[in-house]
Image (cartoon, rainbow, N blue to C red; front, side, top):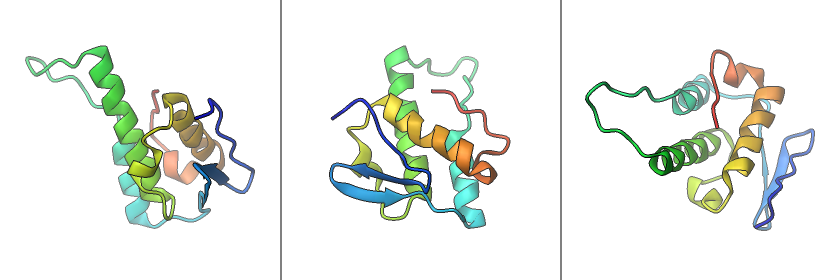
Length: 109
């Protein structure tokens, strides 16, 4: 898969030959779910420590789930092969063009 992911100004992009569109309006439930999935997961003192690889895998999983919850027809499994950079591209586009979704969300890649 190529390293770039192009999203046009209307929110259309393509993954493996299938076209998707990031909508301009979202339900309160979509907004809530999206924000919750992108919240940083705090370390728990005395809890299990994740390795850098495990934390990266967890972050990629949550980025895929967050995208799937707001993009119609997109399933998290459909974007399993996207690089972390491609997933970040989707969420940065959303932050730039759909600010109501990302208000009060600190997005770390």
